[in-house]
Image (cartoon, rainbow, N blue to C red; front, side, top):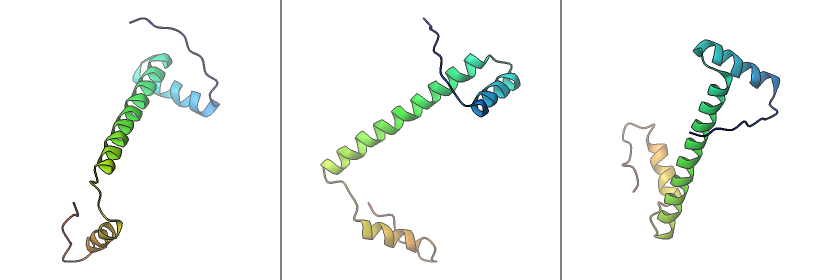
Amino acid sequence: MKSRILSADISADLAEKVEDLAHRLDKSEAWVVEQALSDWFAIRDARHAMTIEALADVDRGATVDHERVEQWAASLATSNPLKRPI
């Protein structure tokens, strides 16, 4: 895979955390940063996909009334919880 250098001005505290983790894992600081960025983008992409899915649910009317959700949530602390609203 082709690579390139990317520089960023980060806080000294964050740089120290990167250095410490790299040392503990016996990896380079660049490896730690690349892993962190890869994980962050994976999480961001997953959240975006869930948002698109949720908006599609709303568009087709697949929603649950807020009051029903509140009643269900309140019932969870009782001896007779309600079924999860669908």
